[in-house]
Amino acid sequence: SQQGEEDPQALSIQEGENATMNCSYKTSINNLQWYRQNSGRGLVHLILIRSNEREKHSGRLRVTLDTSKKSSSLLITASRAADTASYFCATGNTGFQKLVFGTGTRLLVSP
Amino acid sequence: GAVVSQHPSWVICKSGTSVKIECRSLDFQATTMFWYRQFPKQSLMLMATSNEGSKATYEQGVEKDKFLINHASLTLSTLTVTSAHPEDSSFYICSAFLAGGNNEQFFGPGTRLTVL
Image (tube, rainbow over all chains, first blue to last red; front, side, top):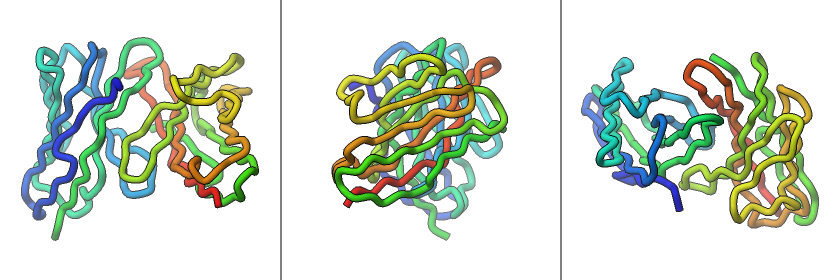
C-alpha cells in the first residue's frame, strides 16, 4: 500500500496545550497537505507545503517537512475544544494531484 | 474558496438496488474529479479519477462495473453504486481539482450510504 502512516492514531489533550501529529510517507512527492475532518463530514484543507519548503505557518498551525526522512509534522498551538477532529496528511504528485492519504490522527481537546 | 457539493448527503437503500451520488463544483469548472471511500474511523481511499468527456480511471481493486462513474460536464460527476450490498455501506467523498495556483482539490461534504 502506498498509504502514509500517521502517529499517534489518537491524541487527547487539554485546551491550551499544543498538539503535534506526525506523518510519514513512502514515495517522492511534489507537495504534502494537511486536512481536518469533523466526524461524519467532508474534509477541510488546512495547509499545503511544497517539497522544496521546510516549514510553513498558518495561524496556530505550523507544518514541517523533511523530505530526506519522508516525514512531516503538524503542530497546533494553544488548542481549543473546536480543534477536536481527525487530521489527515495527504501527499500529492505533479499533474492531476492524485492524493494519497495517511491513516489519520484523531484529536480530542477537552475543555 | 471553491465549493463542491454532493447529493444526497445520506441515503438508505435495499440490497440489490442502485444508488447514484452527484458531485458538483459550484463556482468553478473541473476537468478532473476524484471519488473516495471512507470506512468508519479509517482514512480516505481513492476509488477512481473522473475525467470530463472520457472514461474514468479506477484504482486497483475497484470494480468498474459496480461503481459506474460519469463525468458528463465540467461541473458534474456522478457515481452509481450498482446492485448495492451491505458491504458497500460507507462514506463516499468526492473532490474536484482546480488547476492553476496550488493545484488544489476541493472536497464535497460526503454522502453516507447505508445498504440494508
